[in-house]
Length: 339
Image 1: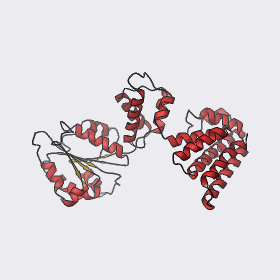
Image 2 (image 1 turned 90 degrees about the horizontal axis):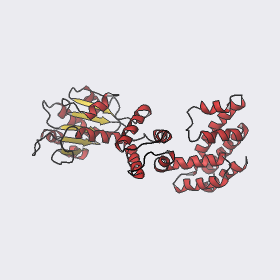
Image 3 (image 1 turned 180 degrees about the horizontal axis):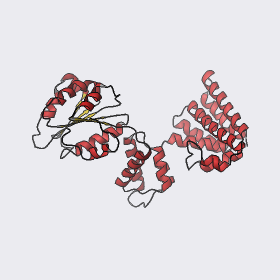
């Protein structure tokens, strides 16, 4: 059997006693791990008790294929139901799980953790067709699902956020549930017990991709013709390990987007409408800066900057020129050219 949508959370919160085997799979390994822990906690009395919880891995099955069935049928010396956690062994696990599913009465609760499994993967097909097992996909959270997950984690940590700070979290988290949880725990540590509500600056200082934030600083320093701020942001990016192509290309891409918006304005659309109806939507934190850039840069100036960035990228790739030096020259030149 397979669970999808809203039924997943209900099952994870209260596992069905008639389903002794569960397969968790998907690209979000943080979510796989968290759901495994929750499932086990809902079935056995004490997940930390080594007599009640046992880990099995692929190497164990390779050496002893019958190990999974033996563990699943072993009784606890102290009484109570046991749980078996099988990790990272989808291919090796197939035969062992096939033996497990043939049992008439399975004593232990078995959770199998795997990565991405296509619909035709033997292990996934077998679990989905079984009447005594459940397959649960763990995809990366987004949209309303991500927002709900973030709200739940914030409630667990007793954190309250201003609306713009919450919007920032929704935009910067979600690639992996484990990372999302750790970032919110880090935010709770930062806030301490006596902070009534966190604002955008608080959250942005703790959570998120520092390189992405530095790149934003660089982009808007160039657009604002602030050569000193641009140089500082560029130094920060290089210190964080960014390579020159990873600086030049996103800058050019963002300028191309502004070029298209500037073209709409020159064609007669109002500045406000262009900014408000941008797709994908602009982050609220950058709207004012984009609006100002569109007031001070023309289509021709955007096109010229994009062309110069393309030439700089070719120079870095083809001639073996000192790539960081090339960036340090063109970035302030872009700002000065339109000052």
